[in-house]
Image (cartoon, rainbow, N blue to C red; front, side, top):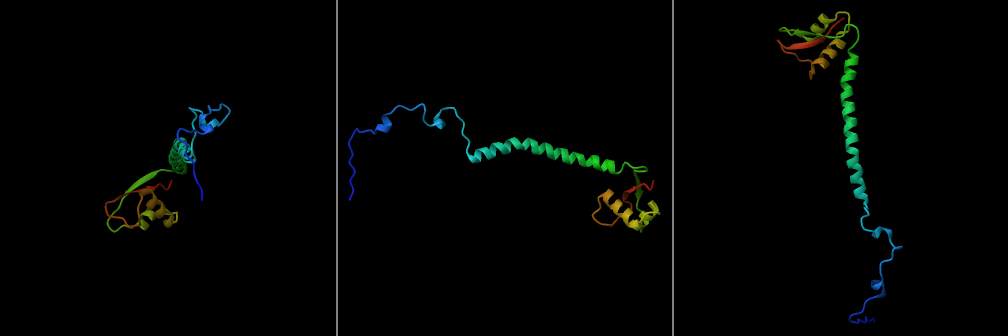
Length: 131
């Protein structure tokens, strides 16, 4: 069996000592201590402007790459209005008879943002110049 003796008004010697100036350095007032989570948050907040800048630089460079791709001799666009009963194959053959119609159709679909090869009469399409 164990017993604890309690003496009223008793204080341990450790609580009576004055703070030691050579003791724990982390106990100084005014010192900022970051936890692991705090460092992650601080680093993330500091990295946000860099990430945004990189995204803007990459996304704005896409337009320059597209301009450089179409900057060759004879580059440019012409516009064609689709007649009733016309197909992309006929339009591709009319635009550039010397080229493979499948390549020209792919270019027409890409230029106009078409989901498929379905076109409507009266629709205005951008087509590549044969140059």
